[in-house]
View 1 (cartoon, helix red, strand yellow):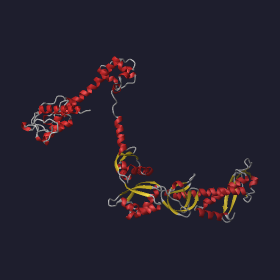
View 2: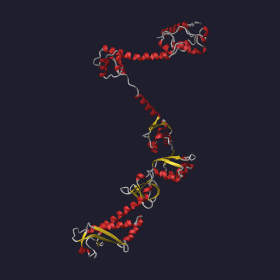
View 3: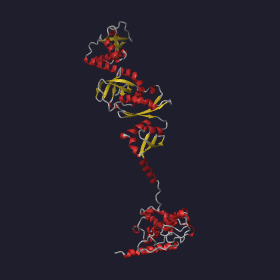
Length: 548
């Protein structure tokens, strides 16, 4: 027992804890061992003789006249053996022999000492590192425990779990690495210090070490999103308008950021200019993709929609959605990213859903359709006028209560229903179509009266010769020359001032086709049309004669 005190001092220095804590742990362990050996539930006390280093154990009992509890009481006659001055009501200490403690008691004492020392060590570690969560520490890999690494961070050991390691990194015993303190737990499964190399705080602390502007507060890191081993996005802003925040982080020829990339084993880093405007910030965060427009859908729930060109969609989304996922973490917003084509289809779908469905068959009651017929149609599943108009008489007669006379009534009602829209459209078209230039009828009027063209036309300016010829061609009577032949035979209109019309194309060339009658030199508008009809009839006759 004389060497226990020396062992306590050595253990306390090794673990960095107070020797008194270790001493109390040893005393508690001896008490547990003695109580187990002597099989007593009475009060025990352990003391350490600093001179000899021996630990003595005493049983504490109260002096009484008649003993009722042997574990805590002692008679007066027996008490005076240990203390001659003992009286009723006083307390005596009865020494117990510690040399008789067996192997089992010693093992129990050892376990209690280790437990107490471990708890004291955890308290010390927690008090030292609890306020350093997020700090950067230099570590040395001490050993490997399964997928986890145990690293030495100075006065204690820390655990580097597999989930806090980068997938592209691997370390061996003795490697020096830099980590950030992830958490400090006093008790439980993860008791102790946990460090990380996958946390975004590692990139932030590395930038603070490499960039003096960040360390002194000129440049501020606003946000950081990271997927360890692959890519990191970091948003920075400058408090001094003369300092470029992105350029300060990149450094001359990229020296500052390259040193961080080497520390992270080649991880890509995107340095982004921060903005208070979420639209501008989102545009910067989704770089290198070019954004067409950003729409904020719900500012309270932080939901936005980003539209990009079709060729930029894959670049904006990134590999396995990495780019847009990191941008969403950086902004703290929910981002829906779509291409121009997807947005166009979505708008078309919305517009299609907004189209008002066709009018119901009940609208035909105003056009003479009896109510009992409307009820029969509705019972048969015919809901709209459009659906009714697409049915054949046979389909209508197949409905119960519909006979051929009723079919005729239905047809008349449907025709009356649609005629009101046609009349309105014709009236609107007539009001919107003015007369053509030079007094010629408009194109709509020419279509309505193809058999009654004007017999004479007002003289047209020389500049409108081609337009007048086209209008006269449209005004040709039914059965007249075909458009191709009319264009070939008639090329000019009467000149201003009553001048004779120009000769046909055939007369202009000076040569007439063989067998074709020579056209008259001068004709008026009416005779010209008759001549064209005669020429066409003769041509048709010749074609019929030569038909086999």
